[in-house]
Length: 264
Image 1: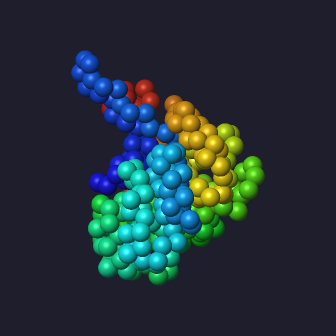
Image 2: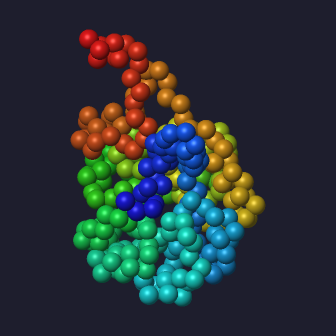
Image 3: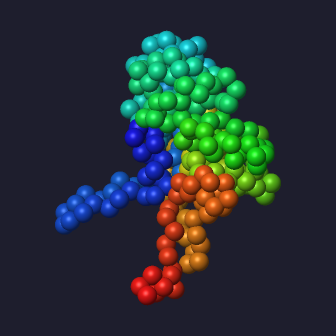
């Protein structure tokens, strides 16, 4: 498993506690990953990334894998990858050889053979209003995460905005990421967390370093969602209806009545 996918799993399920006396405490993971996007002025943007130290970074606007050679010295130690308009098998292999840990791509222009690299986090970019039949088909594709473009939201999130995310997260077994133009407010972040969003993608050129630092702290300090007593995982619907398996997230904790039935 690559570094990015390991990060997503730890965010979804929490870090395992150390075993035995004197064991080191598990590293605290954020409730959602902060994934910075460097879309232009790459050298300057990567300096911001080095100062901020986000959970992961995407670089876009590159003219092919060879362009990574020009910025390789500034790439972070944390998981990083590229966001591209299309992807061939040869390009995917070359990006991987450069150390790329995640690839973000659209449906159109991406070759199926390019997704054979299972160690790389494969992120499919989507617009928010995906129809249900398309979501069923998308859930069968060899991708690990869905990046939903919500950059049109410039202020407080409306119920309609949240509904667009919920319609995708409740019907998919993939990790759900959301691309934003501005950091959501605290209550909006909690709502996105509760909908199963595992990461926010934000362009470092859109906001100040101070705002990014504040967002990083908020995501790290925001508690994980606590499932209610009778609550099952959000993946019941896609698992039973669409055959896509359970969505990434905390496992269902059985209540006392279920445990008594099991004991019998």
